[in-house]
Each structure stands twice: as structure tokens, then as C-alpha cells.
Length: 253
Image (cartoon, rainbow, N blue to C red; front, side, top):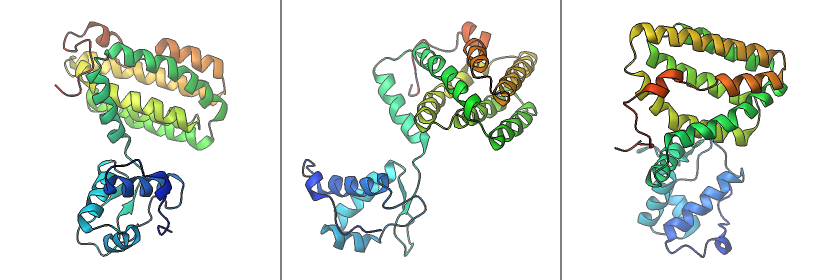
């Protein structure tokens, strides 16, 4: 990594040197000058590069750590490890913003319903053999779920695999973000269903997922989009009838 030329012309708007340093390092990661799996220089070296004191440097690194962009390993002689930000971190921040705005759960469901049919159409056009194999392997594991909550988590993994098969990075991020916000809500709905209802839900869901996989395998983009628009909602009738779930998003109650 060449961290010797911080973009000082770009960061004069920051009132704190720690934010300036964090933004410069963030930019280097975004531009690919340093990649996930690489180590930044040590804290002492970074202090020399940026000409800041240790408290300022540590605050800058804590900012990046809070964004899950780096991992700080106390006691290590190597610098911070660069990593791919966790979608969960972005989801929590987005969820907080949406909850503060009084966003309804139906708003999220509607957003997902608009995005996913287009995504599965792309998946049908662009999927690879390995994409299909991963979806089938996931469904096999999901079918052996011990209970409905375990299945919901496996179902979320299947959704991610379908989205990845679209090979559109922007849609992958957007759908994963919305799905991660909804997963907690779906679990709240399904937590109170009976064992028989849960088993029926699992069987019906697996059948839908298998049919979608077949449509994607056959590269039937229109058929996949139409099918998922009609049958893609997780939770089904339990979502519609649940009284345990409020009308608004509540990740923090």
C-alpha cells in the first residue's frame, strides 16, 4: 500500500484530523489501492505518514473498525487487516434510519417485491452451473431444517444465492440489505406457529424454491419473474394474520 500521499486536497472539509485520516484510508480501500486481506501499515507508521498523534490515529482506526472496514488485532505486530464490510453493519444503520422515519414493514415488503422479480429474471439469463449447484445444495440442507426458524435462516441463504446468480452487484447489495432487515420480522411472525403449520410451511416453500430453480435452470427469465412476483413472499399467510408484529419496523424496541 502506498499511503504516503494522503488526499489532503479532498479532506479539508473535515473538522477533525481523525475523520480526515479515516476518509483518506477509506478512499484507498474503495479505489483498490489496498484490498481485503491486506494489512495497513502499523499504527506508528500511519502516525508518521499522516503526521498525527497517537490518540488521533487510534480514533481514525476506530471509525473504520466501527464500519467493519478493518479489523484491529490487539497485540499484533502487523497493521490493521482490511476486510469486506459486513452487510449486517449497513443493515443496522439503515434500519435505525428507517425506524426513526416511522417506516412500515409493508414498505420494506413492497420494495423487495418490486426488486426481486427483476433479479430472478437476471439470474435466469446469467446463472452458471455452479450457481445452480449452490442453490440445489442449499435447498437440500433447508429441507432438513429442525424447525421453522432454522428454515427461515436457510431460506435467507437461498435468496442470497439467487441474487448472486444475477451477477449484478448493485442489486445484490440492495436486495441483501432489505432482506436482512426483514428477516428479523419474519422470524417474529413464524416463531409462534405450531409444529404442523411449520412443517407445512417448509414443504410449500421448498416446492416453490425448487420450481424457481428449475425456471432459472431453463433460462426462462419471464417465467421466473412472473412466478416470483406471485409466490416470492416469505411468511405467506402467517405474515398476513400475525398479531405479534406491529405495522412499523422495530429493530430497536
